[in-house]
Length: 230
Ligand SMILES: [Zn+2]
Image (cartoon, rainbow, N blue to C red; front, side, top):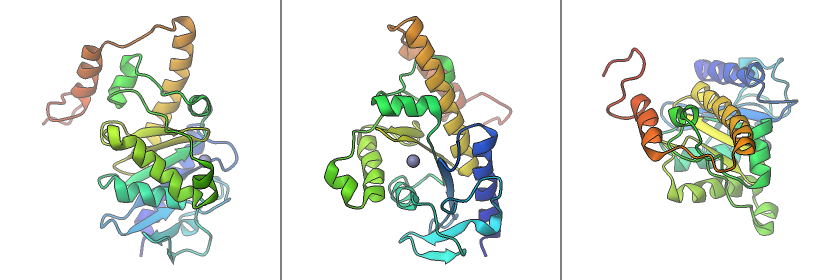
């Protein structure tokens, strides 16, 4: 019943390997059905190389398994919380990619320092607060989702399609699972550049007018980058 959705999610999870975003099973990707009722997600603890569309688990918004024989990712509740709160996203990617996770562990935002960043994200990629002891001991995954949502009380999830969870790793999203992965690739590369740039010059900063120019020529009503034509 969910063949296309499962195939897309299987392919997206394999891209984690292609783009060097994961070691072992340190990541997962999901996509939500067009009607917003079902989520296809990687099964827990299955190697990306061996993954087939049949292994992908489909759950409803209450985490009930609708299709699939395997257990869904332990992070499924995080994905559910994000889909509920960020109503226009269709795909989510989670990784512990090296440079971005270093920023998450240090509790530092990835500040916008250049146009590569501005082409993807309209501002700094924020790092959440740490979860409290109570939040960790009680419904940890759901609370991880809630902390991300709390962080986005002051940001727009449509123009900043990624976040660092403090002490943990990276979550990105997009209009489908593939776009979520491409955003995760961008976050990792930006974290790497950010680290090196700040070593070379700790006072680096991108002027707001350059951020505006680069973000808006690709995104938004008056975008003119690419072959799309508007
Ligand atoms: Zn994780």
